Length: 466
Ligand SMILES: Cc1cc2nc3c(=O)[nH]c(=O)nc-3n(C[C@H](O)[C@H](O)[C@H](O)COP(=O)(O)OP(=O)(O)OC[C@H]3O[C@@H](n4cnc5c(N)ncnc54)[C@H](O)[C@@H]3O)c2cc1C
Image (spheres, rainbow, N blue to C red):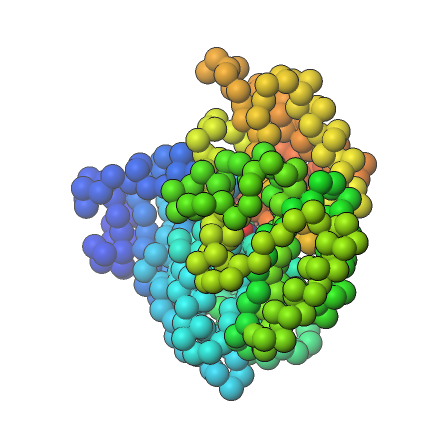
């Protein structure tokens, strides 16, 4: 064992360091992304339990120039947790304490390794609500959500992860602890440093604790699945529902037929909520304080959408189970994995540009191979689309070239539409070659200067993002 690993072992004890030959645990088999496809190449997993321990770990790594890769729940889609055999993994899997819940001020203080779902359930038990939700909720951690500035299903009403964080504690590359554990909504005393780390994908510091903002629980939740036959109707419907529901709209998720057909095949779906012969499906949800009047208002809004021709059919969830089925269809992204190898894109662009973009992008893909399967879904209200494109039947040695041509087909039409190559999943290694499509030279230069300032030895998630 190297002297550094020996020091780390004596610092953390056997529970704090996993090494294949030491613990007889197969590190390679640990998932490093949401696909579960990439092997973990790191020789050891470092598992601190406290911020102080992580700080000591980083002091040793910094001194030795040892590169590290941080692991939360490893549900990312961008190879953000990929490591080489020369990098150590820092896993937050033992930092899972919910430290306190302040009902009066509506905050929860947690360690960064807590799974998102645990935060949601803890808030719920205390009649409060944590306004971040995404399909990987059971495994994704709060630290990972913050590091990626995760989006998800309720951004339209509550914003992204950034909006749910009041305070943050970070261990810097040299082991210093930067504690900004603010509890207030307002604090304009100088720079708000936490925002530098939110969305920085572990390249500027390791998030160890956070003060999360909670909201009042909304006892009523009304959900419907609607269908329409034209793209333009979906954006009109969005405006209509926002207006008619007076701020209660909490989700507006759009599924193209290509995705709906596959997603409905999930084991937990049973009878699909609507037949699969419509071009566009929209999952609409509103939440509020009064079940009776909220559902009345929702129904009226849907009926008026129907009479204006914005939708052609709709089904209202009449039980929790029906609600869950609608969400299970939306969240059944793993059903796409059957089409591997495929690329799941996460682009964003102004809604007014989407239809033209999709047409151009699909033509580009067809020019590569007409048979390639493309499935689309999105958080339309946030201008965010997920597009899955299969690579097709292709020889092993042609895969990388095929990937590049599909990436170009998807990303190039974004430039003239002021779109972004990442709506919510981040950049990681996967999208790094394309960053300049949506960030200017000066923006990238300043990002590099920040990296140099916080991590001059380039030991945190080296080579990722920029
Ligand atoms: C089925 C499914 C659905 C998904 N839906 C959504 C969605 O709707 N919206 C969305 O935004 N994402 C979605 N994702 C992607 C993923 O769940 C999010 O990016 C999530 O925030 C990652 O959290 P994690 O704990 O798994 O992070 P990881 O995958 O472990 O890490 C992600 C990145 O953050 C870094 N990191 C992790 N923890 C820390 C930390 N404590 N400090 C500093 N850096 C850290 C890692 O090094 C890596 O670069 C989905 C994924 C799946 C599999």
